Amino acid sequence: MNRMLDQAHITSLFENATEGIILTDRQGNIVLLNPAAERMFGYQSNELIDKNIETLIPDQYRKQHGEHREGFYRTPSNRVMGHGRDLYGRKKNGENIPVEVSLSHYSRNGELFVIAFVVDITTRKEIEQSMLKQQMELEKVTTEIRKLNAELELKVEQRTMILKEALQRLEQSQKELSEALDKERQLSEIKSRFVSMASHEFRTPLSTVLSSASLLEKYKTTEEQDKRARHIDKIRNSVRHLNEILEDFLSLGKLDEGKVGLNLSEFDLKAFIEETTDEMKGLLKKDQRLVFRYTGDTLINSDKRLLKNILINLITNAMKFSDEGGEIIVESEISGPQAVISVEDQGIGIGKEDLAHLFSSFFRGGNAMNIAGTGLGLHIVKRYVDLLKGQVRVQSELNKGTKAYIVIPVNTSK
Image (cartoon, rainbow, N blue to C red; front, side):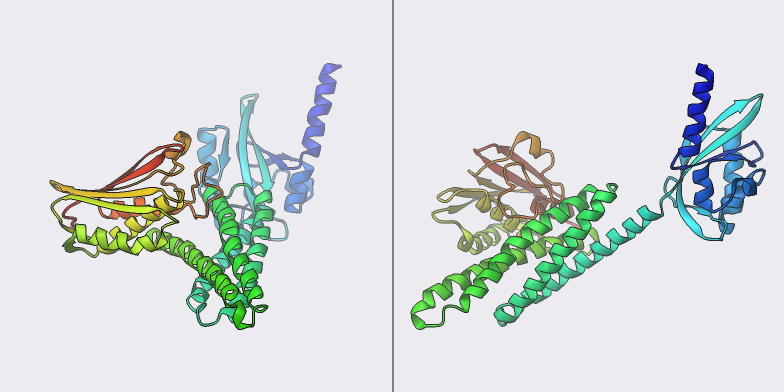
């Protein structure tokens, strides 16, 4: 009785399985297939029984499939087919469909049989294509926003409307991307972080621009000039933040495309850092202090542009994650063949669990989620330091501050 019950269960599983199941013999001839396989390929069962499995393979792949099949028979094992390449099946009407195939085998009376489990992944492929299209549209929107930012000083009212449209497009793109992510969870972690970061970082400054621009229309008298100036400052600060985000994206894009090269020259490192720190003082919070100390020789042969971007990133981070009235110390020295530059703050610090991920793209520390930023700064710093053939490391303690060290050769060669 139990044996009959087991047989009934097996038959039910075979008949009602949602994925196609095809059984072939040692010669590759179809012995049995379930209703799901019939529906998938558009055949009746009796049309395929005793037919070679290559009947279900597109013409251009049949010869190659036959060779792979023979190889499988020589050394059979349970496996998933198609690693690193797309697989297709051929329906009765000649249409090719993308599939996933898992193989299993068993022997009966000394004869080898192979079971193929086949899944039609047409819907998944459509979702992947939709995701790629959405990513391209999002990148296009980002590029358009950067171009428009350059003209904002002259056309505030016109840009406000354009930015509003861009925000709506970004929000729509995020919604569509989120829906696709729910259906297809095989997207990479970096894409997920990018969508999350972009939706948060773009929305806040754009909303500020839109609301301040709307309020500007209400202040028309001379006595209300101070109110107009206050909202114009808000717009400028928001646009500056957008520019910082876009510059991070552009820097990362150029690095990924290998478009960042070295432009070496000899210069005075002490004077160079003094000039850079003086430029940064205008961005300090209330009562913050930026202190610079230098020891040793001063001449160095390196790339001033990359080194300046590194310093700006580190000093900006120190300002951002420090309270008003805090002290930021920049120290540098040349010792033998190396130049060492450090930036130290007394800010919120970094948790031990986050230190290992600091240089990953789009990474934000657990205690920094409410502070504006892209999570690209230290990743870009690391990439620039690598180009200069140097090293970067960070020491930090939660709620006590952070110290970043940059070590580069005094004489960098291409």
